[in-house]
Length: 180
Image (cartoon, rainbow, N blue to C red; front, side, top):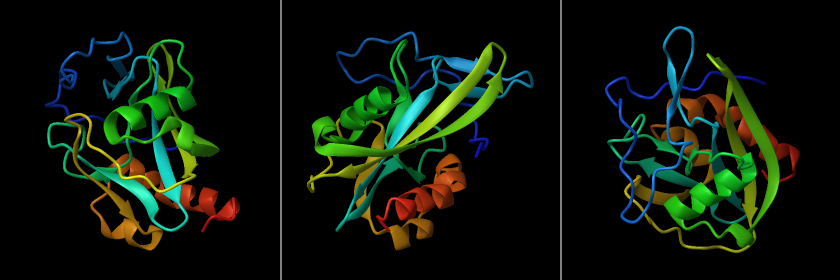
């Protein structure tokens, strides 16, 4: 199923700030549709929906300066050149939330495709199961909070529009894997 995620805020015309010591990657750039809608990530973007059997899913309260700031979503961001969606999603989730890359099992990849001027932009949600409980950590300025949320309580949050549009499908992925 293909859906259109929401665009970055038009007022946010520059890349987000970098944590100290980080260099800008060529993937940290906008891509545009014919109508001028822009999406972050020259090589696409990816995020991780972390699920734990007892604690629910890990949600990120997005920093105010970010795309749809103040809403709840999942850790993720722009992919680097040559980086797979899974590798990019796990890297971003580790950078933003301390998700242990070797402490999860990949269950599914859900891809949203958007036609852009030079091809197709994709956002991939990588659904993973946390093998052990871990305390997430805010490792950069992209989060206001990180919380484990029961699946039944996710809809009560003010969700990032792209995540909200995908949430029912992602719940079905978990259900189809026998995890809900």
